[in-house]
Image 1 (tube, rainbow, N blue to C red):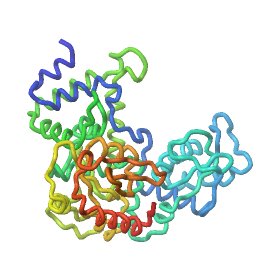
Image 2 (image 1 turned 30 degrees about the vertical axis):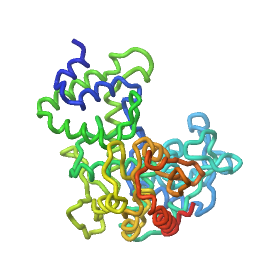
Image 3 (image 1 turned 60 degrees about the vertical axis):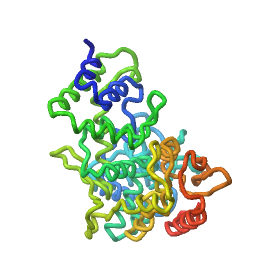
Image 4 (image 1 turned 120 degrees about the vertical axis):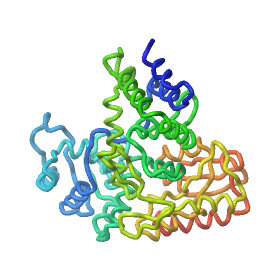
Length: 415
Protein backbone atom coordinates (compact mmCIF):
# COMPACT_ATOMS: atom_id res chain seq x y z
CA UNK A 1 0.00 0.00 0.00
CA UNK A 2 1.47 3.38 -0.95
CA UNK A 3 1.78 6.31 1.47
CA UNK A 4 -1.00 8.36 -0.15
CA UNK A 5 -3.47 5.52 0.31
CA UNK A 6 -2.33 5.15 3.92
CA UNK A 7 -3.08 8.86 4.41
CA UNK A 8 -6.57 8.45 2.95
CA UNK A 9 -7.19 5.46 5.19
CA UNK A 10 -6.67 7.55 8.34
CA UNK A 11 -10.26 8.77 7.89
CA UNK A 12 -11.78 8.44 4.37
CA UNK A 13 -14.80 10.53 5.46
CA UNK A 14 -12.76 13.71 5.97
CA UNK A 15 -12.55 16.05 2.97
CA UNK A 16 -9.51 17.74 4.54
CA UNK A 17 -7.53 14.51 4.11
CA UNK A 18 -8.63 14.08 0.48
CA UNK A 19 -7.59 17.71 -0.11
CA UNK A 20 -4.14 17.14 1.42
CA UNK A 21 -3.56 14.08 -0.75
CA UNK A 22 -4.35 16.17 -3.83
CA UNK A 23 -2.32 19.12 -2.58
CA UNK A 24 0.92 17.23 -1.97
CA UNK A 25 0.75 15.83 -5.50
CA UNK A 26 0.46 19.31 -7.02
CA UNK A 27 3.49 21.29 -8.20
CA UNK A 28 1.93 24.16 -6.21
CA UNK A 29 1.84 22.08 -3.01
CA UNK A 30 3.54 24.84 -0.99
CA UNK A 31 0.78 27.30 -1.83
CA UNK A 32 1.45 30.89 -0.68
CA UNK A 33 5.12 31.78 -1.13
CA UNK A 34 6.42 35.07 0.23
CA UNK A 35 9.89 35.45 1.69
CA UNK A 36 11.51 32.19 2.70
CA UNK A 37 15.09 33.14 3.55
CA UNK A 38 14.95 36.57 5.19
CA UNK A 39 14.65 36.75 8.97
CA UNK A 40 14.08 40.21 10.42
CA UNK A 41 11.91 42.03 12.91
CA UNK A 42 10.34 45.47 12.96
CA UNK A 43 13.28 46.93 14.89
CA UNK A 44 15.69 45.69 12.21
CA UNK A 45 13.73 47.39 9.43
CA UNK A 46 13.57 50.60 11.49
CA UNK A 47 17.35 50.56 11.93
CA UNK A 48 17.87 50.14 8.18
CA UNK A 49 15.39 52.91 7.34
CA UNK A 50 16.94 55.29 9.86
CA UNK A 51 20.44 54.63 8.58
CA UNK A 52 19.37 55.15 4.96
CA UNK A 53 17.79 58.46 5.98
CA UNK A 54 20.92 59.43 7.91
CA UNK A 55 23.11 58.70 4.87
CA UNK A 56 21.06 60.18 2.01
CA UNK A 57 17.81 61.63 3.36
CA UNK A 58 15.20 61.79 0.63
CA UNK A 59 17.76 61.59 -2.18
CA UNK A 60 18.78 58.64 -4.32
CA UNK A 61 21.56 56.39 -3.02
CA UNK A 62 23.87 54.50 -5.38
CA UNK A 63 24.27 50.84 -4.34
CA UNK A 64 26.59 48.00 -5.27
CA UNK A 65 25.55 46.15 -8.45
CA UNK A 66 28.03 43.23 -8.38
CA UNK A 67 28.65 40.49 -5.80
CA UNK A 68 31.62 41.05 -3.51
CA UNK A 69 33.03 37.68 -4.58
CA UNK A 70 33.30 38.99 -8.16
CA UNK A 71 34.43 42.52 -7.21
CA UNK A 72 35.71 42.77 -3.62
CA UNK A 73 36.25 46.54 -3.76
CA UNK A 74 33.75 49.39 -4.10
CA UNK A 75 33.84 51.64 -7.14
CA UNK A 76 33.34 55.38 -7.25
CA UNK A 77 29.82 56.31 -6.13
CA UNK A 78 29.39 53.31 -3.80
CA UNK A 79 31.18 54.88 -0.83
CA UNK A 80 27.95 55.94 0.88
CA UNK A 81 26.50 52.46 0.38
CA UNK A 82 29.58 50.90 1.97
CA UNK A 83 29.19 53.27 4.92
CA UNK A 84 25.48 52.45 5.18
CA UNK A 85 26.21 48.72 5.37
CA UNK A 86 28.90 49.31 8.00
CA UNK A 87 26.50 51.40 10.12
CA UNK A 88 23.72 48.79 9.91
CA UNK A 89 26.09 45.92 10.76
CA UNK A 90 27.39 47.83 13.76
CA UNK A 91 23.85 48.28 15.16
CA UNK A 92 22.31 44.94 14.16
CA UNK A 93 25.38 42.71 14.51
CA UNK A 94 24.95 41.46 10.96
CA UNK A 95 24.70 42.89 7.41
CA UNK A 96 26.80 42.64 4.27
CA UNK A 97 26.71 44.66 1.10
CA UNK A 98 25.45 41.62 -0.79
CA UNK A 99 22.78 40.53 1.69
CA UNK A 100 21.41 44.06 1.97
CA UNK A 101 20.89 44.59 -1.75
CA UNK A 102 20.06 41.00 -2.78
CA UNK A 103 17.75 40.04 0.09
CA UNK A 104 16.61 42.82 2.42
CA UNK A 105 16.19 45.50 -0.26
CA UNK A 106 14.12 43.09 -2.37
CA UNK A 107 11.64 42.66 0.48
CA UNK A 108 11.73 46.34 1.46
CA UNK A 109 10.80 47.27 -2.10
CA UNK A 110 7.86 44.85 -2.01
CA UNK A 111 6.93 46.27 1.41
CA UNK A 112 6.61 49.72 -0.16
CA UNK A 113 9.47 51.14 1.95
CA UNK A 114 12.02 51.82 -0.78
CA UNK A 115 12.06 52.50 -4.51
CA UNK A 116 14.71 50.89 -6.69
CA UNK A 117 16.05 52.40 -9.91
CA UNK A 118 18.13 51.25 -12.89
CA UNK A 119 21.40 52.79 -14.07
CA UNK A 120 19.49 55.60 -15.81
CA UNK A 121 17.60 56.35 -12.58
CA UNK A 122 14.36 55.03 -14.00
CA UNK A 123 12.10 53.36 -11.41
CA UNK A 124 11.81 49.58 -11.44
CA UNK A 125 8.68 47.77 -10.26
CA UNK A 126 8.94 45.59 -7.11
CA UNK A 127 9.07 42.37 -9.15
CA UNK A 128 10.93 43.96 -12.07
CA UNK A 129 14.08 42.45 -13.51
CA UNK A 130 17.34 44.06 -14.49
CA UNK A 131 20.19 45.79 -12.65
CA UNK A 132 19.19 47.95 -9.68
CA UNK A 133 21.71 50.76 -9.16
CA UNK A 134 19.91 53.24 -6.90
CA UNK A 135 17.41 53.21 -4.05
CA UNK A 136 15.36 55.90 -2.29
CA UNK A 137 12.96 55.99 0.64
CA UNK A 138 9.21 56.04 -0.05
CA UNK A 139 6.65 58.32 1.66
CA UNK A 140 5.55 55.32 3.77
CA UNK A 141 9.13 54.86 4.99
CA UNK A 142 9.38 58.53 5.88
CA UNK A 143 6.12 58.29 7.82
CA UNK A 144 7.52 55.35 9.77
CA UNK A 145 10.74 57.20 10.57
CA UNK A 146 8.96 60.38 11.62
CA UNK A 147 6.20 58.72 13.67
CA UNK A 148 6.69 58.87 17.44
CA UNK A 149 3.51 56.99 18.38
CA UNK A 150 4.02 53.23 18.81
CA UNK A 151 0.45 52.35 17.78
CA UNK A 152 0.79 54.34 14.55
CA UNK A 153 4.19 52.78 13.87
CA UNK A 154 2.74 49.30 14.32
CA UNK A 155 -0.12 50.01 11.93
CA UNK A 156 2.22 51.48 9.32
CA UNK A 157 4.53 48.49 9.65
CA UNK A 158 1.55 46.14 9.39
CA UNK A 159 0.65 47.88 6.15
CA UNK A 160 4.15 47.33 4.78
CA UNK A 161 3.99 43.64 5.72
CA UNK A 162 0.61 43.33 4.01
CA UNK A 163 2.19 44.71 0.86
CA UNK A 164 4.98 42.13 1.09
CA UNK A 165 2.49 39.35 1.78
CA UNK A 166 0.02 40.33 -0.94
CA UNK A 167 -2.77 40.83 1.60
CA UNK A 168 -2.31 37.41 3.20
CA UNK A 169 -2.39 38.85 6.73
CA UNK A 170 -5.82 40.34 6.28
CA UNK A 171 -7.02 37.10 4.66
CA UNK A 172 -5.92 35.18 7.78
CA UNK A 173 -7.57 37.80 9.99
CA UNK A 174 -10.89 37.45 8.14
CA UNK A 175 -10.62 33.65 8.21
CA UNK A 176 -10.18 33.57 11.99
CA UNK A 177 -12.93 36.13 12.59
CA UNK A 178 -15.43 34.25 10.44
CA UNK A 179 -14.56 30.98 12.14
CA UNK A 180 -14.80 32.73 15.52
CA UNK A 181 -11.61 31.02 16.73
CA UNK A 182 -8.81 32.35 18.90
CA UNK A 183 -5.89 30.64 17.22
CA UNK A 184 -4.51 28.65 14.29
CA UNK A 185 -1.98 25.90 14.93
CA UNK A 186 1.17 25.67 12.84
CA UNK A 187 -0.18 22.61 11.00
CA UNK A 188 -3.55 24.29 10.31
CA UNK A 189 -1.61 27.13 8.71
CA UNK A 190 0.80 24.81 6.90
CA UNK A 191 -1.78 22.36 5.54
CA UNK A 192 -4.75 24.64 4.89
CA UNK A 193 -4.43 28.40 5.46
CA UNK A 194 -1.44 28.70 3.10
CA UNK A 195 -3.69 27.47 0.29
CA UNK A 196 -6.18 30.35 0.59
CA UNK A 197 -7.17 31.49 -2.92
CA UNK A 198 -4.80 28.99 -4.53
CA UNK A 199 -6.01 26.93 -7.47
CA UNK A 200 -6.01 23.14 -7.68
CA UNK A 201 -7.85 21.01 -10.24
CA UNK A 202 -9.75 24.05 -11.56
CA UNK A 203 -11.00 24.98 -8.07
CA UNK A 204 -10.07 28.12 -6.15
CA UNK A 205 -10.02 27.37 -2.43
CA UNK A 206 -11.85 30.26 -0.78
CA UNK A 207 -12.35 30.95 2.94
CA UNK A 208 -15.40 28.68 3.19
CA UNK A 209 -13.47 25.69 1.82
CA UNK A 210 -10.46 26.31 4.05
CA UNK A 211 -12.71 26.73 7.09
CA UNK A 212 -14.28 23.32 6.45
CA UNK A 213 -10.82 21.69 6.29
CA UNK A 214 -9.62 23.33 9.52
CA UNK A 215 -12.77 22.34 11.40
CA UNK A 216 -12.45 18.76 10.18
CA UNK A 217 -8.77 18.65 11.10
CA UNK A 218 -9.62 19.76 14.65
CA UNK A 219 -12.23 17.01 14.94
CA UNK A 220 -9.64 14.33 14.22
CA UNK A 221 -8.39 12.47 17.27
CA UNK A 222 -4.96 13.40 18.58
CA UNK A 223 -3.68 10.04 17.30
CA UNK A 224 -5.13 10.59 13.79
CA UNK A 225 -3.70 14.10 13.55
CA UNK A 226 -0.27 12.84 14.55
CA UNK A 227 -0.47 9.98 12.04
CA UNK A 228 -1.53 12.38 9.28
CA UNK A 229 1.36 14.74 10.01
CA UNK A 230 3.92 11.93 10.11
CA UNK A 231 2.72 10.36 6.85
CA UNK A 232 2.72 13.73 5.07
CA UNK A 233 6.32 14.19 6.25
CA UNK A 234 7.18 10.71 5.03
CA UNK A 235 5.65 11.34 1.61
CA UNK A 236 7.30 14.77 1.21
CA UNK A 237 10.85 13.43 1.32
CA UNK A 238 12.81 14.85 -1.65
CA UNK A 239 14.96 11.70 -1.76
CA UNK A 240 11.86 9.73 -2.75
CA UNK A 241 11.41 11.70 -5.99
CA UNK A 242 13.32 11.85 -9.24
CA UNK A 243 13.74 14.92 -11.40
CA UNK A 244 14.23 18.60 -10.57
CA UNK A 245 12.80 20.68 -7.68
CA UNK A 246 9.41 21.06 -9.36
CA UNK A 247 8.99 17.28 -9.34
CA UNK A 248 10.15 16.77 -5.76
CA UNK A 249 8.23 17.32 -2.51
CA UNK A 250 10.22 18.74 0.39
CA UNK A 251 8.50 18.95 3.78
CA UNK A 252 11.46 20.79 5.35
CA UNK A 253 11.31 23.62 2.81
CA UNK A 254 7.52 23.71 3.02
CA UNK A 255 7.37 24.13 6.80
CA UNK A 256 10.36 26.48 6.76
CA UNK A 257 8.45 28.80 4.47
CA UNK A 258 5.36 28.54 6.67
CA UNK A 259 7.46 29.45 9.73
CA UNK A 260 8.71 32.51 7.85
CA UNK A 261 5.13 33.50 7.04
CA UNK A 262 4.16 33.04 10.70
CA UNK A 263 7.13 35.17 11.77
CA UNK A 264 5.84 37.98 9.56
CA UNK A 265 2.23 37.53 10.70
CA UNK A 266 3.29 37.68 14.35
CA UNK A 267 4.73 41.16 13.78
CA UNK A 268 1.35 42.51 12.64
CA UNK A 269 -1.04 44.28 15.00
CA UNK A 270 -3.59 41.51 14.51
CA UNK A 271 -1.67 38.49 15.86
CA UNK A 272 0.52 36.97 18.57
CA UNK A 273 2.66 33.84 18.10
CA UNK A 274 3.00 31.42 21.01
CA UNK A 275 6.21 29.56 20.23
CA UNK A 276 5.74 26.95 22.95
CA UNK A 277 2.21 26.02 21.81
CA UNK A 278 3.02 26.63 18.11
CA UNK A 279 -0.18 28.65 17.75
CA UNK A 280 -0.95 31.98 16.10
CA UNK A 281 -3.37 33.81 18.39
CA UNK A 282 -5.79 36.55 17.43
CA UNK A 283 -5.32 39.80 19.31
CA UNK A 284 -8.70 41.07 18.16
CA UNK A 285 -12.00 39.85 19.57
CA UNK A 286 -15.57 40.42 18.53
CA UNK A 287 -16.48 40.23 22.22
CA UNK A 288 -13.90 42.51 23.80
CA UNK A 289 -12.78 46.10 23.58
CA UNK A 290 -9.04 46.40 24.02
CA UNK A 291 -7.86 49.81 25.15
CA UNK A 292 -4.10 49.42 25.14
CA UNK A 293 -2.04 50.49 22.15
CA UNK A 294 -1.13 46.94 21.19
CA UNK A 295 -4.64 45.83 20.42
CA UNK A 296 -7.57 46.80 18.27
CA UNK A 297 -11.30 46.53 18.59
CA UNK A 298 -12.78 44.36 15.87
CA UNK A 299 -16.42 43.44 15.45
CA UNK A 300 -18.55 41.40 13.10
CA UNK A 301 -21.28 44.04 13.42
CA UNK A 302 -20.28 45.74 10.15
CA UNK A 303 -20.56 42.46 8.25
CA UNK A 304 -24.05 41.86 9.58
CA UNK A 305 -24.95 45.45 8.74
CA UNK A 306 -23.82 44.95 5.12
CA UNK A 307 -26.27 42.07 4.64
CA UNK A 308 -29.08 44.06 6.27
CA UNK A 309 -28.47 47.28 4.33
CA UNK A 310 -28.20 45.48 0.99
CA UNK A 311 -31.04 43.04 1.74
CA UNK A 312 -29.01 39.98 0.73
CA UNK A 313 -28.26 36.63 2.33
CA UNK A 314 -25.04 34.68 2.67
CA UNK A 315 -24.36 32.86 -0.60
CA UNK A 316 -21.99 29.98 -1.18
CA UNK A 317 -18.91 30.99 -3.14
CA UNK A 318 -19.10 34.67 -2.12
CA UNK A 319 -17.05 36.57 0.45
CA UNK A 320 -17.08 39.99 2.05
CA UNK A 321 -14.12 42.09 1.01
CA UNK A 322 -12.82 45.48 2.23
CA UNK A 323 -12.41 47.64 -0.87
CA UNK A 324 -9.81 49.80 0.88
CA UNK A 325 -7.91 47.26 3.05
CA UNK A 326 -7.72 47.57 6.83
CA UNK A 327 -3.93 47.58 6.67
CA UNK A 328 -4.03 51.07 5.14
CA UNK A 329 -5.02 52.49 8.52
CA UNK A 330 -2.36 54.68 10.12
CA UNK A 331 -4.17 55.27 13.41
CA UNK A 332 -7.22 54.16 15.41
CA UNK A 333 -9.55 56.57 13.68
CA UNK A 334 -8.58 55.42 10.19
CA UNK A 335 -8.95 51.77 11.24
CA UNK A 336 -12.47 52.57 12.43
CA UNK A 337 -13.57 54.26 9.22
CA UNK A 338 -12.07 51.48 7.07
CA UNK A 339 -13.82 48.83 9.12
CA UNK A 340 -17.27 50.01 8.03
CA UNK A 341 -20.00 48.22 6.07
CA UNK A 342 -19.86 50.99 3.45
CA UNK A 343 -16.30 49.85 2.65
CA UNK A 344 -17.42 46.24 2.15
CA UNK A 345 -18.49 44.41 -1.00
CA UNK A 346 -19.79 40.85 -1.38
CA UNK A 347 -17.92 39.30 -4.31
CA UNK A 348 -17.28 35.82 -5.64
CA UNK A 349 -14.12 33.91 -4.72
CA UNK A 350 -12.58 34.20 -8.21
CA UNK A 351 -12.85 38.01 -8.19
CA UNK A 352 -11.57 38.13 -4.63
CA UNK A 353 -8.58 35.99 -5.61
CA UNK A 354 -7.78 38.35 -8.51
CA UNK A 355 -7.72 41.33 -6.14
CA UNK A 356 -5.70 39.43 -3.54
CA UNK A 357 -3.14 38.38 -6.13
CA UNK A 358 -2.79 42.04 -7.08
CA UNK A 359 -1.78 42.88 -3.52
CA UNK A 360 -5.27 44.17 -2.61
CA UNK A 361 -4.39 47.22 -4.67
CA UNK A 362 -7.72 47.51 -6.55
CA UNK A 363 -9.09 50.13 -4.19
CA UNK A 364 -10.91 52.58 -6.44
CA UNK A 365 -14.55 51.61 -6.94
CA UNK A 366 -16.71 52.58 -9.92
CA UNK A 367 -19.79 51.25 -11.70
CA UNK A 368 -21.11 51.05 -15.23
CA UNK A 369 -24.45 49.66 -16.39
CA UNK A 370 -23.39 46.04 -15.99
CA UNK A 371 -20.37 45.90 -13.69
CA UNK A 372 -18.67 47.01 -10.53
CA UNK A 373 -15.08 47.94 -11.35
CA UNK A 374 -12.13 47.83 -8.96
CA UNK A 375 -9.06 49.72 -10.20
CA UNK A 376 -5.50 50.01 -8.90
CA UNK A 377 -2.88 52.78 -9.22
CA UNK A 378 -1.69 51.41 -12.59
CA UNK A 379 -5.27 51.38 -13.94
CA UNK A 380 -5.44 47.58 -13.82
CA UNK A 381 -9.04 46.54 -13.30
CA UNK A 382 -11.00 43.68 -11.80
CA UNK A 383 -14.58 43.70 -13.09
CA UNK A 384 -17.51 42.07 -11.31
CA UNK A 385 -20.75 41.55 -13.19
CA UNK A 386 -23.69 42.73 -11.11
CA UNK A 387 -25.69 40.00 -9.38
CA UNK A 388 -23.30 37.42 -10.82
CA UNK A 389 -19.88 38.26 -9.36
CA UNK A 390 -21.02 40.87 -6.82
CA UNK A 391 -24.18 41.02 -4.70
CA UNK A 392 -25.45 44.36 -3.39
CA UNK A 393 -28.34 46.82 -3.49
CA UNK A 394 -27.90 48.76 -6.73
CA UNK A 395 -29.73 51.71 -5.15
CA UNK A 396 -26.78 52.17 -2.81
CA UNK A 397 -24.19 52.67 -5.56
CA UNK A 398 -24.03 56.41 -4.90
CA UNK A 399 -23.42 55.86 -1.19
CA UNK A 400 -20.72 53.26 -1.90
CA UNK A 401 -18.94 55.54 -4.39
CA UNK A 402 -19.07 58.51 -2.05
CA UNK A 403 -17.63 56.53 0.85
CA UNK A 404 -14.89 55.04 -1.33
CA UNK A 405 -13.82 58.50 -2.53
CA UNK A 406 -13.79 59.85 1.01
CA UNK A 407 -11.67 56.92 2.21
CA UNK A 408 -9.09 57.41 -0.52
CA UNK A 409 -8.82 61.08 0.39
CA UNK A 410 -8.75 60.40 4.13
CA UNK A 411 -5.91 57.89 3.77
CA UNK A 412 -4.04 60.12 1.27
CA UNK A 413 -4.39 57.58 -1.53
CA UNK A 414 -6.24 59.36 -4.27
CA UNK A 415 -6.21 57.14 -7.36
